[in-house]
Length: 213
Image (tube, rainbow, N blue to C red; front, side):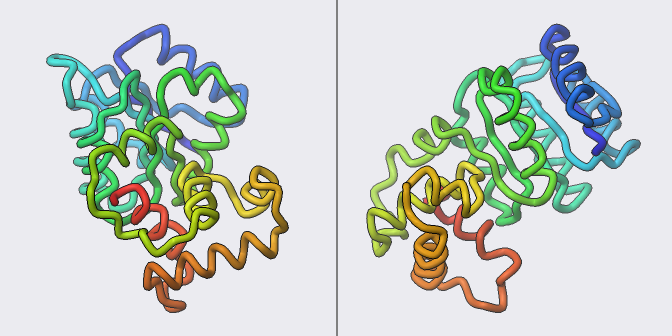
């Protein structure tokens, strides 16, 4: 799996390269700024990208803007955002195109190597991987809740789905059977109006509905 990284911190980018190499990933390029990142994506057509929100010269939103532009140029390009902070508006903008292949993790999550690489693989496969703290911040300040019809258990299931857990992991974490998880997910899809025709994308659509509420 080929990866392009946008990260200006040399120590962190070198650490990411080493970590990924030991886990079977190929780092095709590392860029320290947005133009370099976009050029590397155009050249290497990676399976996934890792992008810091804040890049030179202003260290404000260059990274996330570059990620949005890369997804415009290469439809569905998987992007895993790394940040020291939860940038709520930028996270919502990245999620707003309604497609999967998106992750947003805080940088301290990189130290949990298995979690980090699992999240990267899920994103590369078109899923989502959201840091629990990011989810909490995205839900702040919203008066209208389009998921109001969901039960408390269905909210728990959907929250774990948003973090990127599969059905087996959801069952384990909630101490319920796998059949119960399937039932809850079916109820979630029905209440969100996600039809059988969208079977391949309903999980991603449900997670995006949760994150964008």
